[in-house]
Every structure is written in structure tokens, then in C-alpha cells.
Image 1: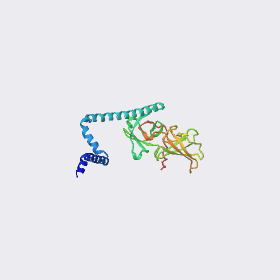
Image 2: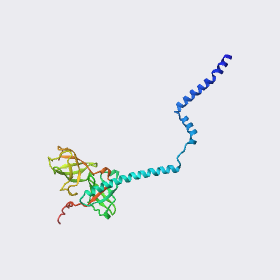
Image 3: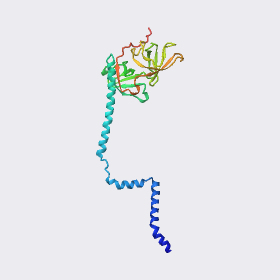
Image 4: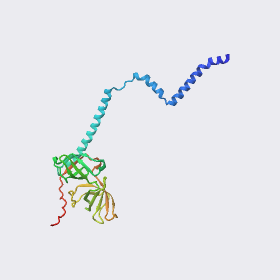
Length: 257
């Protein structure tokens, strides 16, 4: 008994400290140091400076102004592009912002923030840098509704600039369209540039449309080509509206009484 007491007096403190150390290490491992971190935070929090409500509001205001500045810079760039495009045109057009576009009909129609008060009428043509966008199908004093050439119901008479081979284009509800040729063996190849043709009833001739992406000469009943439309349909924000100088489509003959 005396020997055990002497041994405990000599080594007891070390054993207790070792046990506490092992227990603390096990607890830290089990909690992934969370308790230790909380203790550190409790001790150091009085010396940390937390942002005031005024600081938070000021930072939010700065971020808001930065976002607005970025948006204004983007709009300014778009307007510069439209101004440069307008200067290249022989005829003066009407600047019009795109103010409405349905997600369900993204490739079909857009609404413009200009109308009869600005001189826009039904059948006016709508252009953007890159080419033809569509035509005005309805108008109010302050807005206009545009049927896009990418719409599946839209058909446009077009021709290949290089060879003058003609046909008509059908929208596909995307930035691709299909051209069906009038000729059985048209002169066409990948990369050919396309524009509206002189026989188009809806648009004046020579308006740029896009480029030939691929050709299928074996397609029945007529050869076809896939066209990549060059107008920026995905990102339309501003467009130019022009009077339509093409002749109106002939009306159906009325039966004689």
C-alpha cells in the first residue's frame, strides 16, 4: 500500500493530465473543432469590429450603382452599334426599343416601344445589325408587334447573292431556317450569302438574311439548304424600323355577280 501511494504521488499528476489531453483530442476530433472555434470566437469577439448598419447599406448602394453603371455601359454600346448601322443605310429609319418578348414565343414575336405616334405602320420592315428581323403586323399609338422571320409561319422569298438561285425561306423557331429552292439543281454551296429576292411580296429585295450552313440537293420534292440567320435574335434590344417599299401582295379576285 505504501509503495502504491508513493507511485501515485510520483506519477498521478502526469496520468491525469495525459487523460485530459487524450479526452480533449478525442472531443475536438468528434466535433471537428467546432467547440474550440466557438470558444475562440467568444474570447476574441469583443476585440472585433462588426460592420454597422450604415456600412451594410453603403456597400449595398455601391454594388447597386456598379450594376447600374454596367447596364448603362451595355446599353450605350448597343446604341452605338445601332447608330453605326443606321449611318450605313440609305434610308432614314426609326429607332425602336424591344420592350416585350414572351418566353413561350421567343422566336415568334417581339413588341417595340414605338407606334403610330412615331410614324410606324403595319408591314413596315424591322432590321438589326446583321440583317432582317421581321415585319410589323399590328400597331398601337405607342407600341408595335413584330412577326420575326424565325417564326415557323414566316415565309420569305430569298436568293443566293453569288448565283441568284431563288427559293423561299421558312422559319424554324430558332436562329436556323430552311430554304427550299425553285430550281431542281440550284447553284449553292456552304457559306453562300442570302438576301431577300426581287420576287418577295413582303420585303424589298437585297435585305441581308444569313448564310448557307448546309445543303441537301437530294431532298424531295425540292433541294433544301439550312440557313444560319445573322440578325441577333437572341439578344434583340434595339432595332431599326423602315417603311416597306415592296409592292403589296395582290388581293384575291372577287367573283363577278
